[in-house]
Image (cartoon, rainbow over all chains, first blue to last red):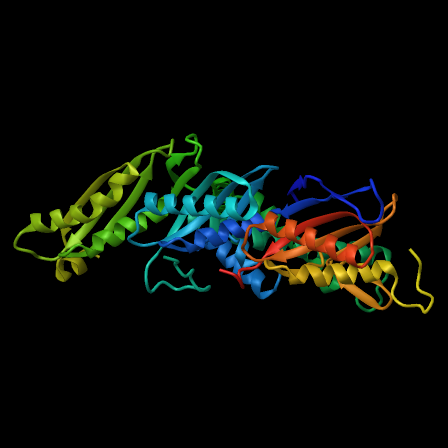
Length: 150
Length: 202
Length: 113
């Protein structure tokens, strides 16, 4: 599992135990890749005009794995490529009929970059978006759609 | 292409099952030679000696001219066609046709739209145009580079005093959708044929 | 470190329990995570403390590792606060910490918005 790790800078503090002895806080913080994936997914779903993530095939597959309690729908349709400092996101989305594709895509990018940087501290350079389908009101749906956040 | 793929899968499954059964039969037969399975005698069960005899006769008939040979030829040709169909189905392009709106070189990432999604969008717009009764034929053809392409659509309209109005209405709805995607539109509206003529034709 | 004569929990177990309790009080921490195989925990003295591992460090003290499930808040900030709180609590309990390694294993949408 790829992770991002950054050693925390030591903060020297004088110890009460003995004069002259420095106690330092040491240790690293690692953020699991699945966290970045989830944050990206959450950020994308929040955008108005996004009905859901994932393509038809991955959704059907996801429904089955969910029933078998193997998979996790919150990471469906999103994949990330993470390094020490950067993250690159790829996702498949289903957009509401009537929305402008370039505009929704830009909104997705803005929100994903913002959320990832705020939550994980990673610089999100690029978000690849594939629009795999349109959602028409009345379409048959398995999973509940994302609630748009104004 | 979709039909061929489905066909390929079906044949694949049947072939697997057939091969498995044949293998089982052969295995049992070989076993019976080594180990007497007592009363079971699988080779008798599968009538293998009888099969052998019959097949021998059949092959002899094949060699000779006559009706059997003709059907054998038909069967052979059918098998070849099945084989070709299988190959096409299996090797057929699996990659989806994607329209590339942004290729990612700008640094912010790529933006792609599935060809089928565009087709759906255009159909929906067309059907909503006043005067349009249906979509007869729709095709979205993307260039190999994926950067541009053509949308060809044939819509039906009911009888209307002013055909141009419907035409305009369709364009009004469809153009704003396909232009930002960099696609060229070829949208035509034809008068829907009345029921009588249609029935006569079919 | 001396093992209490009455057979109570070893300092390692006590430390692990303390770390877990402190971590859960930090805003932004939803839970601790047992790891992919469900084996990231400290076991001993009849207790299983999930999400925490305490290993005696060669130079003395303990290397503590935590796996956290957090809410959707700045994560490194949460980790820093956990590390500070855990270190402070350990000091108060007169237990020595060598390193505090934190892994944010998952996030949850419930909670803070």
